[in-house]
Image (tube, rainbow, N blue to C red):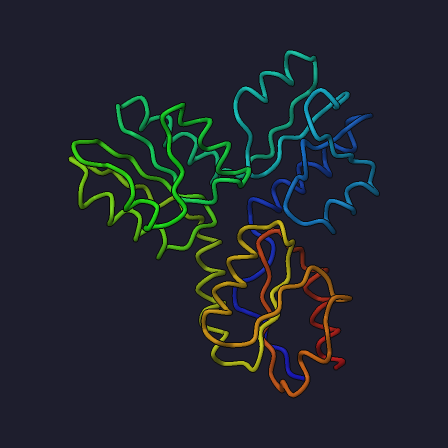
Length: 276
């Protein structure tokens, strides 16, 4: 079986920065944990646990030092950790921090803030917290069409892992009604490049395997993009999940991976595919 790896795939700058930070701090701190999973990849979280880095479900469960995850947290969470005497290590991706700053400025300037993204995602919850009580999360243009934007000043940002098409569609609906619309395309360039590379690769292969955590928004979106091309698409977290029966007859398989998927997992999957 021939395997073609997407030109852009796998671990991104923000995730690498977060991992490097944790590995470095783990050597300095006697007790270290992350607030929830550092990144949305169960295999990486497990590897960190083996290095002595635990996971705290809430700030009150932590001791010593606590790492804020790459997708960001509300400011109140950091304040709580400091009030408890914990050493706070902020591993928030700089691209996510940039979105926080933009929504703060929009809110201060009197704009009603709209966040285009998945309402239940931790990154979006943190952005909403930074924007204040009047912020609204929209997942689609259909949701946007149900809102009343007439006479309003609306500032729009995006979850960093959104698709440009979804963001543009929401902006178009709101801009058609609002008195003033200020939209910031805050989609991470790494996410955009991975999505574009996956969309370009899918039609050239017999099937696509997407590797990454099932709780990873950007990985799920890669799988959706590939599936939309009509090519059989399989989302797995590790090589052991590959089903040879599903790939039977495929001579050329495309391989891509989410931004939280390290090279060692991608290489294991590639090797397993090539051996079929």
